Image (cartoon, rainbow, N blue to C red):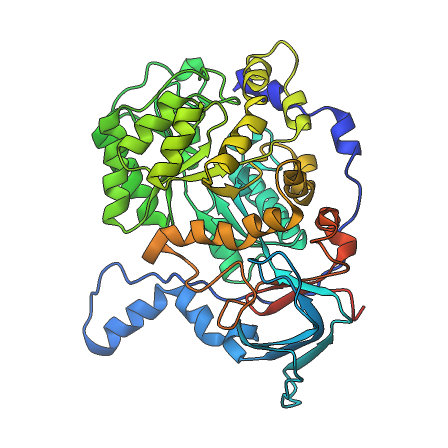
Length: 495
């Protein structure tokens, strides 16, 4: 790991930029997980068989207890006198009232909404503030934020605690959902869903699937040569990345991620910036290898997304049925038109300059970053010109300081979009991308909108973010209420 440990040492000046503490939050229990496990083998009949299932199904048992969560108890929350950004339009509503029962938005009306004054009824005086959907980050790495590259393959108990703490802070920044596109997060997702840790909904990809020397291959040269069928490296044992060098290996690794609960599968179809042995211009997987992943994912009713910068990598992925391209920052105009014509999703990130400058001058990573960064603006221009289905994400790695700027990175989209367009992208548009996972969706229901029947992931904002999108960059002061799945995690109006 000596090749990469020093290359992500963020300058101290970056840490100094971010000092605002997070607001206090309430100790509450969120909605229970949507995924349950079944007994591996039934050894007795009748009642004994049922006992076996219950004993080996702790997730289901926790859900049945309820534990006071909004979704389990049917508790009522009424927001009065709010102006709504619904996640789709360009204006706020007239003063309105919004009723949440359990974890569902039940009614929206400009007229008063009568409610029974029960013990589990909460009435919130909105005072004309903005009520909007919880934010969604479509390119996140929950387990790889606070660690250094060297720590990422070290003590798993320590790195898991770091990931849990970062997940809580992510939620407190107003991000109620993330699409995790690489890393060992299945356990973190389960802990969040069970109420052990406060954090966002996670749509997990599990381990990144890569080739030898591909983006995501963080092995040291001393790990070579690789023996087919041999012992997994530490990187693979932890579920960060899996190396696959044939269609059969790709198929196997894809199915393993799906077996563990992946909602979508991530492959690296071309070179990347952070990986030390992965040139940007290289096209990695063969068509047969990519097709094996696509077929396995489609058999499970979900999709493959790929990391790809260059036209060759993007075009090869599209040819075999990949549904989403991550990054795409070195694409040419012909490739942009192909993406639009085929209806492929483009998951883009307005990567901050501080991320590029975090790579030491003269390093391989800095050289590759210098090549990629100029393509960000050009790719957004292509996306707008050809009306590509564009999602938004951050792709922060190995920097707790930059993670604190999650909202500011979203606000930086105004270089190309209006505030309304940027916020629509980070709410209802990103939710459309999440829905591609079909029945592998761990959170069935409508996300990213404020409308009747949608899941109650909501933010109450001091001010109008459609007029001043920078409000979302200071969640500690401007997000007065943060609700996920009908449960309030932050409420500074009553403190």
